Picture 1: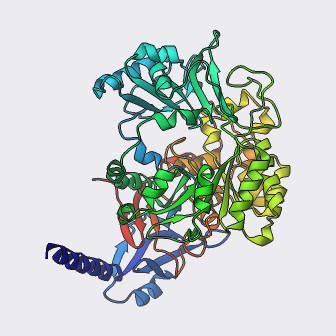
Picture 2: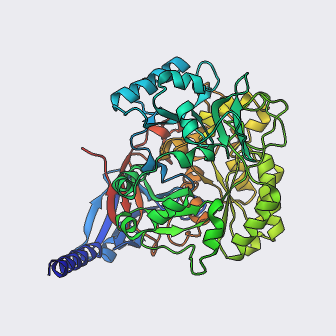
Picture 3: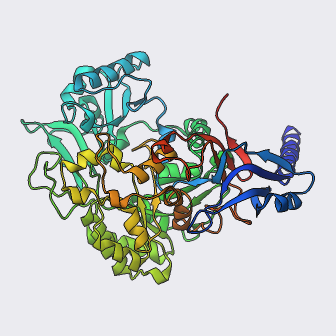
Length: 562
């Protein structure tokens, strides 16, 4: 009887929520930027009905459309835009960071030397009273930010605590540093050899120094404790609130592992999800996915959908593991010269697997940073026979060090470049220690890509860089480093183009341009409200713009706490 009563109560509550959602809401009183078109278009008012936009135009006509019982929302001078769309990040990282030491946390003293880094890890162990024998996980470790400009070593982590398993994840998430107990837990010894596409760095005596890069990192991860389903469910609301707080109404998990795929598509997770979430299952689990004939991609189940398959062709330019046709001036992570990086996967294997994905009608997503890795992507697409006329929209994530000649290949194939403008700030100076200025100046070439007829997007690659949409707008417009060096002034874009890279660009790349990314009748009532209009804000003020509210499916999803 209790079960029946509970079901009836849930049905009544759901019906009541649905009824409220069907009420008309009229937004007016501030700039409303529709993002509908190649030039800025503003309207006086918008009417929503349920989870859809019913009208966008003059306030007089909006009031007629809304009806006398409509709820009126006065923007009070604030600016309304379509909800931002995350072109690439790692949503599941937000579920897994609970309990970890986040070195980017501004509430903590900065660790600028190896000694300060050791102290930060030691303080974290003491503060959280982590028992001996347990794991100590540290995020956002960046050797380039240390005075010594080198990796901390296994022995230096052992000095912090020989009784804990300590792992520091590199900020690129393409490597880690582990102490001796952690290496032992992963059954790694000084005799261990890296898998193809991986690096295990060693000290002068030939012993593992704890640095594991690319595929070598994967030998450590299985030994580490994973969050339980209950812990993931507990963190799901907080995770999506991080995205809502940045104005995102659509998020992405950019390399979904099998356990996370099962969790995020489970009924329990779907019930909690309010943000639209696109999953990119990692290619390492492809055969298991291909064995499921009824598996559907591109279709939402509640707020979650399988978007496409994610391939990893190379590593990270800031970790010096990206694959280039030119050499790194500073050599490899292990000091090797000459060094131009290496692929994670060989061309023939990529071609074979990508063809299987394409034959199933699934979208292809490829991580490629260096120009040699981008060449691999282009060769793979050509081998399959993908052209722009096919409208298959393969996405090359990062496309960071793209050569100018590769733009024409992207246009011919119909590639959507998912660029990463934050690199100009966080690693623009580092890249100049490895490559010529003209090479660095062409990273994330938004302006040239648009001129070539491409539809680019911009992303944070969270948690490689923080979730901060206004900072992303600013880096694509300013392209400046902390030392004041501008990487490619000719690739700077204006505010409208920067906004397109957060709205219409990623919507097109996800085949959702007729569902979101614009304020237009029939599309989802997904909005972000900002305290200032990016179109009229000076470039230097863009990153100071605040999110006042995020609206998903016609309902308020986030507001700052008062």
